[in-house]
Image 1 (tube, rainbow, N blue to C red):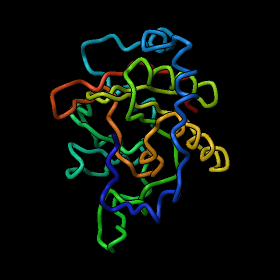
Image 2: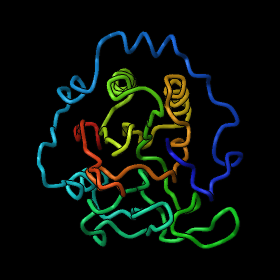
Image 3: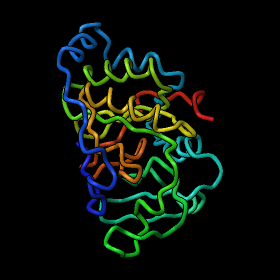
Image 4: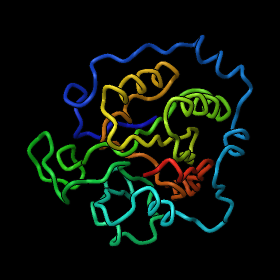
Length: 222
């Protein structure tokens, strides 16, 4: 489950109410029989190397030299231009949207490199589920991919999958109903917040487990 950053207040950044979880809809999707194997087989690019490919993946997700906020932990992070990040596979966390400036101002009026004020427009909306096994989560991501372009699926190194949906330039009139639907299928609403840290693709979690990439479709990224 994603833990909201302490600088983010629910009242200022997130809707006051999200849809209730819909067990019947979840069951209907999971009864189709799709699972992790189907997600893996549907991937246009398969990451099978034992050598982490984090840098290559990040360059595809974020072309050019944007400012990226990445973290070794939730309390140790920096915002740097992409070309100033090296060996990104050693990192746990990343904000899935480029930053506009190196520093911003927190809700408490303090300077920080990880704030809503220096987070740019949404490039990816990441869906993380905090219930169900990996096959059930895969089935739901496959269903959501029928409604929005799925670019990446990353295993958290724990018990969840993170599905990256490309949405740059898409208005909240479209992304918010999509997020509502995902929440009704068990998604954690915390990832709606643009500055929310999520798991670094092919990175290394603090428990020593690799945050493996199970699905990668560069074709939907423009």
